Length: 226
Image 1 (cartoon, rainbow, N blue to C red):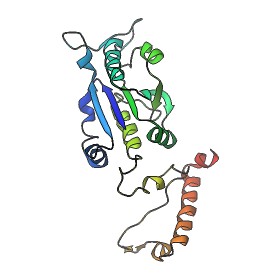
Image 2: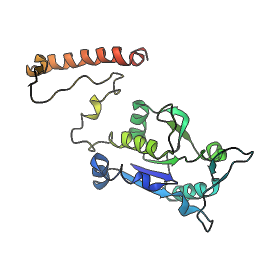
Image 3: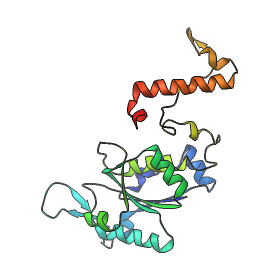
Image 4: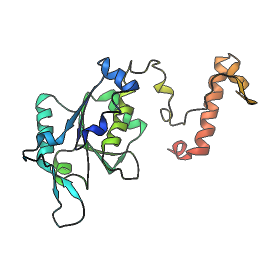
C-alpha cells in the first residue's frame, strides 16, 4: 500500500514513520509512505502557499494552486483510490473504516489542513473523502494523518509479528478488548485471575469474551447498541 501525505509542515511527520512497527513495515516494502512539502509546488519565489480569506476574518487559508499541482503530479504517475482531507467536520474515523481502507485500497492521498483550512474549491472538486479523528481541533492535520496511516498500515498482512494480534484489538468485533496480564502472577498481593493460569484454552477464550462484553457495557455501551 502507498500513502502520499501532503503537508505545509512536513517535518511534523518525520517521527511517526521512522520508528517501531511503521518503520519496519516501510523497511520491508510492505507499505510506502511519501511525505510531500506543499511549498515545493508553489510558484511564488518565497514559496508562499497561503493567503487571506475573501470576505475578511482571522487566519490564513491554504491556496488551491500548489495543492492541486502536487495532486495532479501524483495522479499522473498512478491511480488513487481516495484523496482524503483531514478535517474536524469530516466523517468520524473508526476501526471499520481502517479495515475497509487497509483491505481494499492500494494508493491514497492524505491532505493535511493548516491555518484556517484549505480553499473550499479543493473540497468541492478534488477531495473525495473527508475524515476526522475526533470532535476537537488540532493545529494542523499532520497528527491526524499519522493516526489514520498508522491504523491502516498495522492491519496489512505481515506488518505485525503475530498476524492474529490486530484481529483481537478493541473495536474489531464491536467490543473493547478484555483485560490482559503478564508475569509475575502475583505482585503486592494483586493476583492474575486463576482462569488465565489454567491452561484451558476454551475456558480462557470464554472468559475473555465475557470480560470484553462487561467492559464494553460499562465503558462504551453504544458499541453494543450499534
